Length: 209
Length: 258
Image (cartoon, rainbow over all chains, first blue to last red; front, side, top):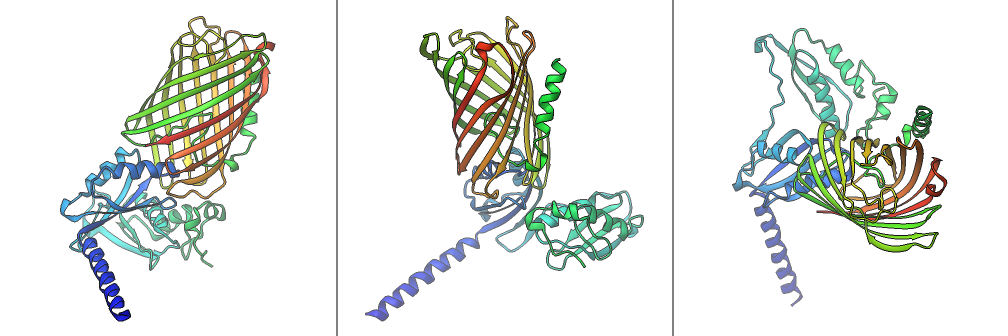
């Protein structure tokens, strides 16, 4: 009798697990970086606006990073543009939206800045930038892409490498100074202590010696 | 003379230290952040005010609606109880207020925002002519202001500069409000926070040349969609007629957003 109960419970739990997996395979997973979330009430306003989208699930907002994650039924094909509009309607600024579609494909908002020069004249610069989180990523990429002549900037959270595509007028030293001014150490240029201390708690990375 | 008073007031405000600024909605001041299109807020903020004339209570029911992400309209329906030291006492409907706000500037960055809001408050003479400013004047009044605020996960400040007009001109007022707070809990979502507030109101009644600087100390607890708050307000400077001098005001409020 005891064995029958154990088998029954195992089958039941296996069924639930499969059901959850099947459901997650039908959902698109969105990650949205939002600027302007200065307080928890802002996050409430944002979530409320997204709950107008019927079928939305697993909404999670990280206050410190401004990152909102949610799932949405894949068959509805929610577009990145619609997500950006929804953030605007909530009264905030969308920075980047990425989505992992239910078929496994990835989409993301364009992060390239149009430049009036040919691709052949662009060169890649890659170097180490200290940082921890998605908030660091958004900050580092933002200051890098703001520099004149920079077309794209991508910082990898795992390897801590910033890869920049830019015109030949842009030097690695300029980029290092820019990210250090925003509070992030590189191997050659260190951020000022006061700027580092003003970074949010999640961004307090281990200083470069 | 007026200039000196304003400078003095501003010095006190600035002298309180920017290190203490923190984000959150103020209690007696106003805020520039709106909660997104198609949102509602139902609020109360009961004031129990003791002056040299007596003790007065204003308990308004405030309903705010945001048709878009940058506009807000609202109506305030106040219940007023008055008890003058000369024996007059009673209760009535206070002056009904109609509110409109429009956010005309927004600069967002990661974890912080700066916003500017134009605001107007039209007061209808539905209350008794008790000559109690902000409680029951029984006259039309028209208030226009600009609310500015910077909010971040580390710093936050809300302030408001406005002018109140009355047909007689007697209580015309240049008003400046500043509110800042100290969160006692880490900002987190879902909302669950406890904040301390420090708020100032500087009022110069231009026609009768009277001045008043009020300070309010408040505490606020917010969980989910419900917020409860309490504040005690008292005067720091009062160069106004003796009978209108304030002693203390106690504010008790709740707000529910949906």
